[in-house]
Length: 319
Image 1 (spheres, rainbow, N blue to C red):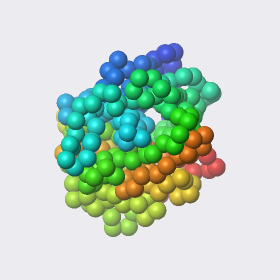
Image 2: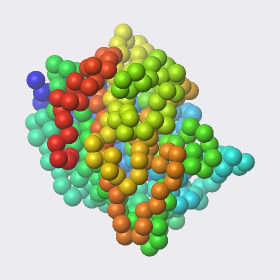
Image 3: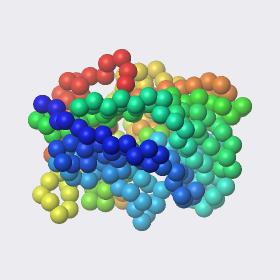
């Protein structure tokens, strides 16, 4: 049975969704005042139907980590991830503010809210440091009905990015720049601090407990592991929560193969990396598309439950 939702839009600032007395999420698109953190829209807080927080915001170790957000850690020399930039094995990470870009909210192309579902399409501009336009994005976010019986809901996030720079754009990551197992980029989630050391599962026998489970899936191709599940235990309450991250089937035919970036320690983080091991190029005037799903659930889900829910929900023809 789906729960009735309440959608509140504070124009120019944020969209919040509540159900059963719980604020499930806030999509914040108000201008961010900290240029070094690569200002961009983000989702935080992100909560389960029972009200347990499953996103982190500006943690002391990485102030630019903000819940769930679309990023690009290495893009033709610019850093749309935020914070220190990885400059190679010798220089390592350095604070170089002039390399940090931003994503600007321009408008909502469409906005549809019903009693159990939310869907909006947002138009954004990717700006290099200094304000030069490099790309335009058409983003669609869909909240599927919150399932009261299953104790979960799903959020779909689609991106269509068009190169408007006037020259090619090269997408990479710290790993393509020489740092091992650091292919973070694309849609990225930062978990709350109490999720540190959480368990990570994938299809078949992939994954396992704690960081060993995360390490088993780090850099794994999405063609072999189209989903991963991250389960953490909360401080202060006797409860677990699970987030499931899944690639839409059409991502297999996208501009470049995707691989998972996932860590359980020293910090809980997952990214749908579109350029983990190798860079790819987007020619001037051309576009690429990806579609992702994040399931937010109460309890510790096992593989059969993850696979059953994803199969039941299905993907349809697009968000």
